[in-house]
Image 1 (cartoon, rainbow, N blue to C red):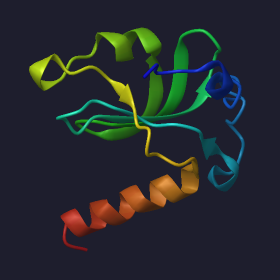
Image 2: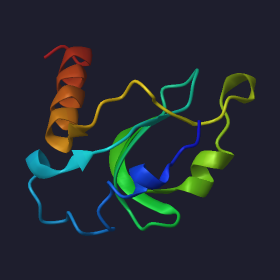
Image 3: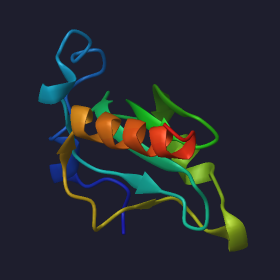
Length: 110
């Protein structure tokens, strides 16, 4: 499966276009995963060529920039490649952040 399709590209707003938008109104159209690892990428802005901005879950969970090239180069166990999660349903950034914060609270015993 291709990481991006033409129809998926059209679902992304341009980089920096959601800077002042409430997370409840920001949609995440897809999710990328690296099988066999904890790495997940939830992009919600794209420059139309190579660069995304979104939530990245790896060693830490943070908002940041990442590129298609980086996703293509990243390798997991047994030389696994980054894949688009075909079971992911589009969601709002606020829902994703809430879910991540709840799982964090459970892990630290709150």
